[in-house]
Length: 309
Length: 305
Image (cartoon, each protein chain N blue to C red):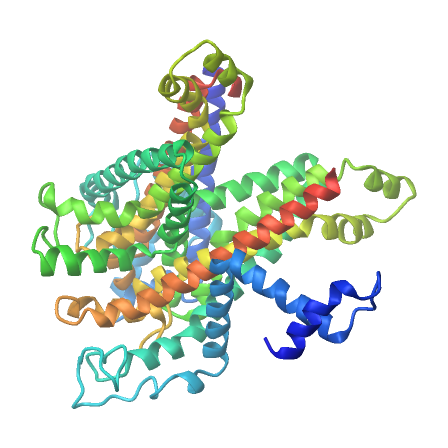
């Protein structure tokens, strides 16, 4: 903090009863608020910072990676972490750090797209089921339960068994497996909201079904879906990398993190770094997403709680 | 109670039928018809094609195929493996006990440890301990089982040599797979127990028990815990279901024989009756555990019925 700021800080209470907030004071207030936020939510701030790093790595991996992801260096096979290769090299002499950085994009796309798919389709199903009620509601929810009983990994197995390992079907499988959770949540939210007076009012004024569903119910119900979706990105990254570990994801030489861990499994006794770092990348990313997701959800709950009161 | 149980079981049958249908449809709408899948890599003769056609009824309409498939299922016939011509059912049931054993140990280990941690978190006077347990719960749910397994292997098998690295023989070989499979179970159970305990402890009957002069441990363990167990008990059904799929990954890491290894082999061999069979058996396992936990829950807590 510089001199002027300090002086301003000391002088402020002595000035006129309602001093016009100067730009400096406002900035200082903003800065202080930020500092207190950082102090009170250290984990959250760290998570945001890490996610920012992840986003940079996925958009511009070349900025962070010291080497190309698939350049094999034959005189540097399976070397441990060193100054020139922070995360060591793999059995083909590729730089593990660079591969982890380049793998970010695949992982992030997988997590986000599958969640988007699950939340959109699941949310729509839940919206229709919750608003329409009756037989359609029962049927849709029962189908969701069947899908919930259909284990996610096996759904992917079934799809990949015929189509062969690829990224698109992996995303599809993870997304479909996650759908029923969103459908159920949305349905219960809509079910609770549709009894409110404002919905009743708009029904009695002759509003169209579409207007009620998308104009009134959706805006009031989607916030809790958002919280779940944030957590869902983390869960889907875990699911997707597990499938990829089993060889059901993008084929080699893709630097997908789960596939990297699988590649290293045979060398684990001698070259621990090959498994440690890509796995750590998964753990930290999922952790950061979970922390942010839980914070978001708590905020959303707080707000909807206030609104309900 | 019987009515409740009967309705649950009936619903379970419907779910299994639905899963069978999904498996049937998925394996037929995906690109590449079963015939080409079966014949991949093998020199094709008209006789062979005819034999496969008649075995899988590929010349009949899809609807006829579906009813033949359901009819076979009703007779407990899961079909014949393409890869080795043996019964799918007998191959699955030969390895099923190994997987079930792993799932059972992981459920028990995770449940007991989670219960203990949850109780400590709800009981402790120290806020930091409660927070520490809460934080480690988030960490535990962020760790992929395959990675946990490999890291455990590095330390306890390769460096320390305490446990065998692979296979299924005896108690020592199941310790590391159990731990890597149960990490999220510990976290989920601990969190559910902690939250439920915190809520239950505010109930008037807890105040009454305390006012009666009962010791704190009696109040918590005999009165509060019994009512706080509900959410955790319901969750166990879902957890066991997810553990069956988690076992697929863990079996791969530890080179254990089981449903997972069978399923993966079936995929690489494009053995679609086998994939279909595994999917069905796993889904049935999921449904049965859920029915059992729901009935147990209803027995413990009569308000549910």
